[in-house]
Image (tube, rainbow, N blue to C red; front, top):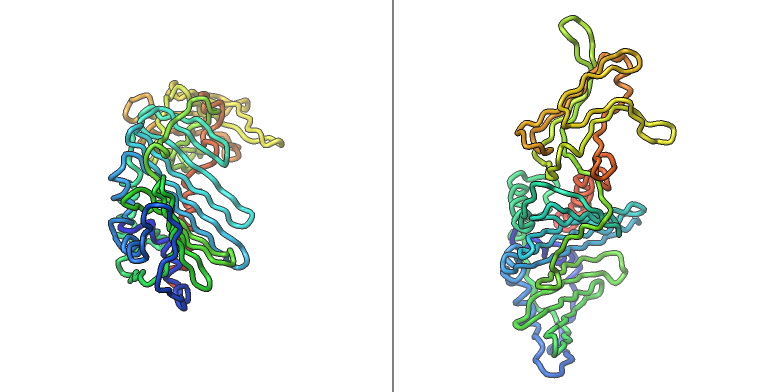
Length: 394
């Protein structure tokens, strides 16, 4: 995890030709009113100090911390942009994670704020929603990120988002930095450039701490940045007046034909809530429904069962039987990992129907405001991995 965030920004500097041909001056230019601006040597000492760019360690030292990583590139005439957001608030026991991906005509923007509260706020684009979790738990997302990165390193996945930067020689010395400062805020902005790219580093406080690093090409086709913030400005909060959204149940599902000892065939749907499930909700809020979409793409159902009923034996208009079952494996009256549902029928038309779970709390079918955050996180991971492969494997 050491230097995880710097990989995006420093990547440009490692590309062939990116740092070649720099013309160095003998003195730093500066605009000052009182305090002495940082020298090029001091700037590069901070950029090359592992402690100054260790995002996990920096987050651990703050009760409130926020990081935003951005990358932009041009591939085959199409611009792709990716932003990863991660923040924590130990005081309010809340965490935020999110992604934004823009590639051609496709755009995704999703964020979630959750923690030690039954309320969850989810943002899709500019719209916020209210979800819930009746067994809330605050997890420091930076610690979780570090653990995930270690697992990725052990698995040597093709989509490793955190390459070992120790294997690279990041010798950032000899740049001629132009520094501007603000006496009142102690803000210092240092810039340098070559024939193709410009680099800007913003420092806050005294002694100086890195607030942001930006690298962008003059043609506008490539850009990378990391922005770090801390303190009251990045405090997190939850609101309970947003529109409600339905629970997302992480399930392993299957369906198909089974044959009884008598030789009779039945059609079966089944699902088990897996270990990735996080939003534990009251089973009394949910209902299993069986039906199909009409011409207006509206789901029409004729058979249903509240999960609190546990078992229902139903007969349809054709005289075929339908057995619906719910298993609360830990008897906690919440939808949680290990719970199971099953639907079976001897109807010959059973395979044409769908089984959906309706959330009465949100007055909507299960799945949240978008069908599966994991899908969008994967898309974001692939976009980030593409940047990583281009940068480090070229």
